[in-house]
Length: 159
View 1 (cartoon, rainbow, N blue to C red):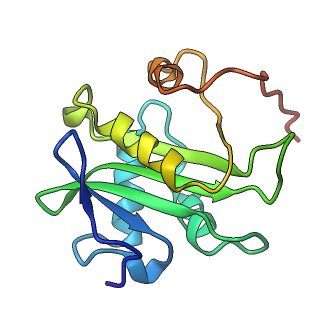
View 2 (cartoon, rainbow, N blue to C red):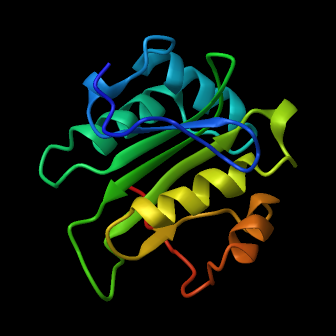
């Protein structure tokens, strides 16, 4: 493991690992295991597992942009929270960073793990951060408490 920094213990009592490359993964978790953790912990707002795996790749080895990072909250060598941050390649009208996914194990929710991960991502991210959240997702309240504001409603056209 060649983590960019030593894991830090957060106010919620978990160890937070910062990953910048695939070589930074701790020996107790693989990228596929992280994808499974995210997929399961994001329910009922999860993306399909192949898209979660692609998000991990896009955070650490994007095809055309500079890499972002991954934060993993760990307790007893098991993930209890994780966050994927992508670089957008933009600045100003589109923030420099996209918080793609953040998840906390259901048994650990309400203990500050999510806030610790998100706050750390704000410290580590170079520039502003945006995220997409469904209006009925209870995590929306956490994002607002941490200082995020609604600027636009996202609209999509699907083919």
